Structures are given as C-alpha cells and as structure tokens.
Amino acid sequence: MNIESIKKLALENHVPIIMDDTLNKIEELLKESKPKRLLEIGTAVGYSAICFEKYVELKIDTIEQDEDRILEAEKNIKELNLNNKINLIKGNAVEILQNMVIEKEEDKYDFVFIDASKSKYPIFLEEALRLTTKNAIIVADNVLYKGYVLGDYNKHKQRTAVRHLREFLQMIKENEKLKSEILEVGDGLAVIRKEK
Ligand code: SAM
Image (cartoon, rainbow, N blue to C red; front, side, top):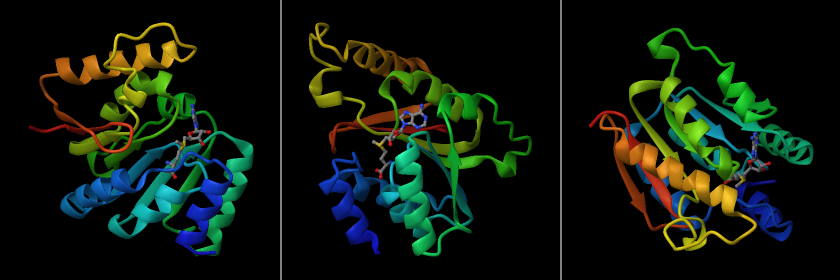
C-alpha cells in the first residue's frame, strides 16, 4: 500500500478525499508555516493526513467517527509505519473537541484542517480557535459547497449545511482578530490566520 493506491481505492469506493488543487494549496501553507502539531477534523481513510505528515514536525491528531473508515485509516497508517506520527482519535469530533483541554501554549495546535460535517463548521471553528497557538493557521474545505453558499439558495435537502456554512463565513468575516481569505480551489477553501 502506498499513497497512490490509497487514493485510487478511496476514489473507487467513493470516499470523499481532498481534491488535488486543494491539497497543493494546503501543502504550500504547510511548507510556509512548518507546523509542529496539526489537528485534522475528518480523517476518512487517512489520505490527507498521510499527505500532510512529511510537513509536520511532531504529530497529527485526526478525528473520525465512521467505523469502517476508522478501520481503513488504521490499516493505512500502520502499513506506512506512521503510527508514531499520526494519532487517530475515534468518535464524534464535536464531543471530542469540546472536551479537549490543552493547558500549555506550546502544546496547542499550530495548524488545523476542518474537513468533516459542514453543519458543524461553526462549532469546529470555535473549538479550533480555542485549541490553537496565537499565530496558527486554520483551513476549512468545502466552504462554498458547490456554489450553494453564495447563491440564492434555500430549497434543498442540504439547506442546514448551507445555513451553517454561511454562519461560519460570517464568523470569520466579523472576527477582527482573524485574517481570512476564501480561495476558489476545490469546493472553496477558507484560509484563516489567527494573527494579522
Ligand atoms: N480529510 C479526508 C481526506 O481528504 O482524505 C477526507 C474527510 S471526508 C471529506 C469527511 C469525514 O469526516 C468523513 O469520513 C466523515 O465520516 C467524517 N465526519 C463527519 N462528521 C464528523 C464528526 N462530527 N466527527 C467525526 N468525524 C466526522
């Protein structure tokens, strides 16, 4: 098993993994910021965490709740001998993050990748802001959600996700301490810098 075969299998099985242009952009940010500790919300089968690993100095904590994907991610991480670097946390990210306490500034995350349930993005952002260092970067994927978020759109079965993504975009716009941009890569990538 290598990274290309993990990607191929994920695509064949319709597992939603990071798109190539989004991955390229995040890799640029990782090279620039050289994080020590990265938090990923939404592991799926471990593809993005495995891609990020070489740019992260100490460790990646990545959260997943789907049992089949957890098994697949564990297998992939183990086969690539990355158990010491990538720590898979199993369960609902909302509960896990709300219960997470990091006391020392130096133990906090300096990079976060939000890539799980869109209707939870406002909560994920709030917790990410609490659990990160003062000059951390927080990146969130799929924030434009096929154009629905910026469009005149409210009659869709996904309208809860759209409403929460709009709330998320409003939160980053209104927070004067953050410097944020929305990039048109993949399905819309928010890049949020805590220190201007
Ligand atoms: N980051 C992965 C990659 O690019 O390889 C893809 C992640 S996929 C888009 C989103 C994953 O988040 C799914 O596997 C889903 O089961 C998981 N997920 C969604 N909501 C979650 C939650 N509240 N807690 C934990 N995992 C969640």
